[in-house]
Structure formats: C-alpha cells, structure tokens
Image (cartoon, rainbow, N blue to C red; front, top):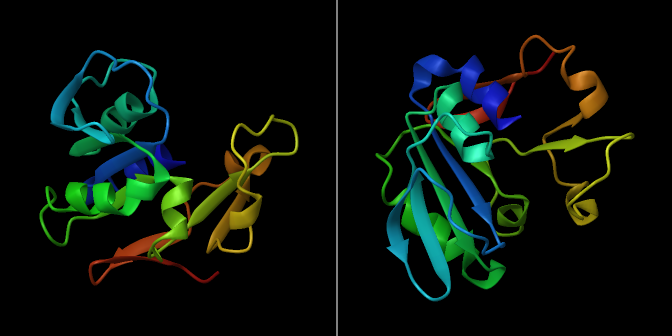
Length: 157
C-alpha cells in the first residue's frame, strides 16, 4: 500500500517512515541516525532489497526512515523523525500502533479474507478513512487520496 501511494504521487518528494516494535537484526543499507537503549532510528539507503523500507525507496520516496521502538516511546520517536523532515513534506508512515496516538490526514487499512493476518488490528478497524480488501486492491488504478494544503485527504467519489 505505501509503495503504491509513493508511486502514485512520485512528483511530491514523499518521505516514508516504517516503525516496528520488533528489535531484529539491522539489515544492510540502514544508516544509523539515533541508537538508544529503548529505540533506534535509521535512514534506508538500499533500494535493491525486498524489505519494506527498500521497496519504499525503490518506489520513489526521497527519504525513508526506519525505527525500532516499543509502543511506550512510539510518539516520541515519531516526533524525533518528523524533526528530521522539512516542514510541509508529504509523509507516508507504516505503523498501525501510531494510530493510537495521532489522527493522520488519511488512515488506510488493508484487510484480507485469504491471507493470514500477522498483526492484530481489530481495534483499529473502526478508525480508517479508507479500507481496502487485498483481493480487490490491484483492480484499483488510483488510490482515492490527495495531498492538498500540506495534508493528505480522501477524495470523495
């Protein structure tokens, strides 16, 4: 989903962010920005791997940040990343947990009837601005959103 949005709005110089609570091994291409006991922030520099942040960079994001952080520091880390990004820059952020703390311009949820869900997002299902079924998503030529006046918003059909 994030990559499709980045591709669709390639002329906007989007910055992408991926935030995870999983402290797994750091992969090639991640340049350390901050590394503390409770969180790590990196900039992705490798667009050739199959991981999400590489795909975001390959899709056209000008910069991609990756953070490993537990939920109790999530908002702090998100704001720390935002401080690295020029004001007014369109941001695409992949982090279901962040929705518990902020109201984004557009919140999108992908669901599937055939694919096993890796994350429990049931508590978020009442909060999206747009919801897609994975099985129908590839049939959509454009995602019905826009970036206007410094903010993402949905487009009414």
